[in-house]
Image (cartoon, rainbow, N blue to C red; front, side):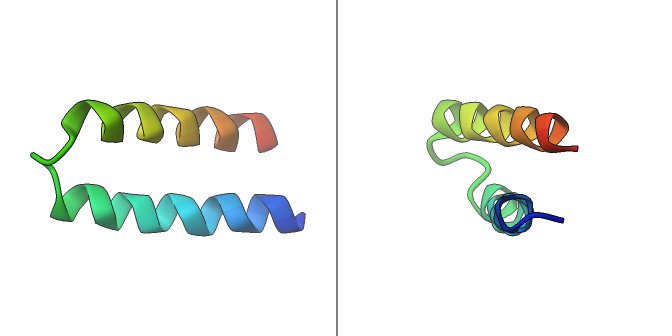
Length: 45
């Protein structure tokens, strides 16, 4: 596992928790960040 992969996974876990806490806040922006993280994870795998 590369350092970048590790960072992305940590960032993804943090954003998942953040999304759960703030489901209704800045919904559109959060959704796009979420989609970007999914794409990055798939690319790095």
